[in-house]
Amino acid sequence: MNTTVDQADFFKTLEEKSDNGALRGDYSRCDANYVVQQDWNAYTPEQHDLWRRLYQRQARLMPGRACDVFIESLAKMDAADGIPRFDQTTEALRKATGWELVAVPGLVPELTFFEHLANRRFPVTVWLREPHEFDYIVEPDVFHDFFGHVPLLFNPTFADYMQQYGKGGLKALKLDGLTHLARLYWYTVEFGLIQTEQGLRAYGAGILSSGGEVEHCLTDPAPRRIPFDVERVMRTLYKIDSYQETYFVIRDFQQLFDATAPDFSPLYEKLGSQPDLAADTLLPGETNIAPNRRQDA
Ligand code: PHE
Ligand code: FE
Image (cartoon, rainbow, N blue to C red):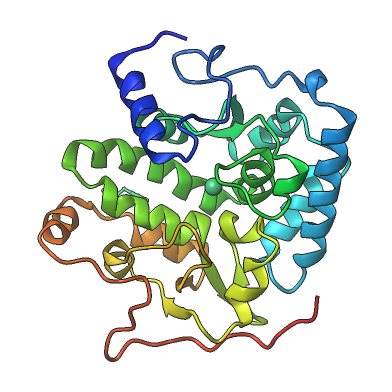
């Protein structure tokens, strides 16, 4: 890998952020876009077995909790039997929405991440968590990235939203809007809920790849569930080490796409001089949507 100033910065920031002073992945082989080969043959039988156990536990929780497009796409992805080959999924994804998967060693710099999304490439981490991390990992691994994020890329509207997000990220870098834009990613792509005729469902990858939050986010009375509003989302801080205290609820993916289409420049300008809202805020007059009834495991 060619180390540029941007990349050096990236590693320095991550060292400061992470507990053990280093990132998990092997960054020694990636190209300038942080892309690596998946090297599928290097996964061990134990790793495929761990994947199967993660998959089975999680897939069982999806009915009545994940939105329909997630469940339908997941079923078509044929990923139950072991760590999938990214190039096979890419073939199906290209036909469906023109997206492709690229393998990466782990977290990548913001600029790189946005460039991938803006070109309809989704970066998927190659390494799998260890057995003792079954329920919780600090950095996203292949299970989170693949199981959580890839199914919705088969939906044309959501796929377009992701590309627009990438373009918006490149723009936000220049406008000093990243802090606010990142909250939009967090509260939609990672932790979004959607209203359906059958009740609330999850579409966020952080929820759908988590063993516990997928029930909590829908039925626990504690967190707030607020109708989606771009400005409200961008003002709201979030939790990275516990379940969310607030979820934002969309009506459908078209609403998400349309609400985020306008130019964000004036919004960044405005929010730059406003205080943030705590993650557990409910403003006067705001709707708090009732949870679903609890579903037994
Ligand atoms: N409309 C946003 C802008 O002008 C771009 C964007 C679209 C960001 C969709 C996120 C999601 O900056
Ligand atoms: Fe994620």
